[in-house]
Length: 253
Image 1 (tube, helix red, strand yellow):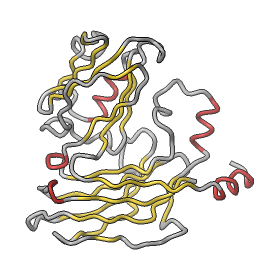
Image 2 (tube, one colour):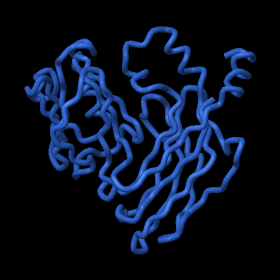
Image 3 (cartoon, one colour):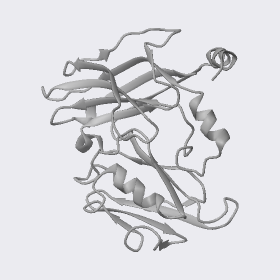
């Protein structure tokens, strides 16, 4: 990136962020690309929280995925292995959102999703069950959805390297019956392989709102270009998701 491009990005900085309550953290996003977007074909994704994810097209389980369309969490025990298995099929695309490749899928951590069909290329989110995942997670994203899994051309690759995100503030609260709580911010690369850098790690007092501090007009810190920031509000061994929230403020430049 040259100086002019960097200056332009600074001028065009966009406010991003979100507010989550129980079960609203997005673990991964999927879409079906087996037919053109304009076609009448439809897809579905059903999560049986304790056991499996089934992907289907036109009401029939897609045999190009997993075992006859069924992805067992006992086999694909992490987000990374689950996403890789989905992306092996030419009919589907998936990517990790607010999570890491090492995050577990077994133990009912993904929220149940019943039948709810969607059109070709329509983005659908699969969510964490926050009381079992033990956290609320939000991603400040530098890239657009599916840029990292679509057949990217050189222009898309170049575009990803020209943007980064900044963290301004987080507010969070949970009545967690005394169990230890923390709010952390990790810098993650596009593949979400690891928490590449820990940029914030602060304790949160039970049943008391935590404010990491307002810093309006400027970010407290930024990711490197092309990377994102994962904000994770978590309990040590429990997370009482009926009384929790997480609000995140940031920028994309």
